Image 1 (cartoon, one colour):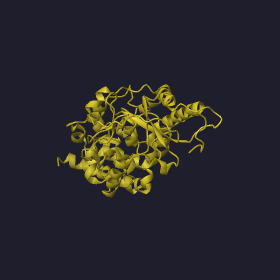
Image 2 (tube, rainbow, N blue to C red):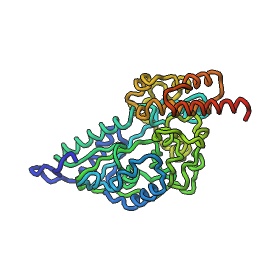
Image 3 (spheres, rainbow, N blue to C red):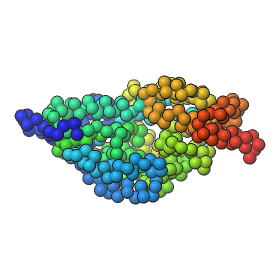
Image 4 (cartoon, helix red, strand yellow):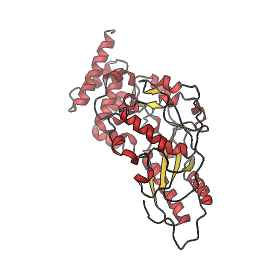
Length: 367
């Protein structure tokens, strides 16, 4: 933690009830849409995590296993943690092309809506740090640590326990009044703040829209996702070859997948973000696959600076687009674009390019 002191001993006693109310108000002022406070007991979620790992549903995300119980026991990750302040921030870009329209245009690139603008990690971390400073000004020096998808944290379980929503069948957090198009962040703290009621009710009911819509059947049962089948995992987390059984199903999704959220009825209550940092950059909401495939590594790094996309690297970028081009309309321009990478120095890129060329050949033969 940033400090081993709960409060300044010379300062008057802190009214934690009042402080909790102020924290939520400050969070709103800083651009978050909601904040809640919870304790550190995640026993049931830990049991679920252990079973998920035993089934190998985390795929090659070895860090999920490596961190052990620190993920489900906040005080093990940050000694002294008593409470977790959870926040959410809307991210759906207001001025972006219709997602469903782009998914139907095979020669366009579909990029998950959260990644069209500036990297959310940086945006939210700065805001959470500012929130911590406000708390420090009111309560004196205290122990805390800020997280934005940057360490072993069960963020959705903590957000649910903070009263921000429930975990849906697609395993994303859903809020009755805001849908699911939002990011989550946390402040672990040693302040004994009053906790909010846990969001115990699940409003998914008998709806299975997300399960039915998943292109790769990654939602293997209600509230259970096998990451090894998930397009977000395959195009972002996986660093090796994409299994052939999923390549045709990926379609034109080159970075992530939103299908389960696009069909969720609760997202009719979602609001587009007013956050300038999440405005679409480089026309990524309407980009042509061929144009993106032509980017050199230098162009990729330069254009994706400050973007969450940058972390997958140029090779995975080319791998993903090669698959999408194989699923695109087999025009002469698509074939030529693939051939320009057929002798690429990366064996992984060459493999996916050849797969795409073979698939196009089969289409042309009517197979």
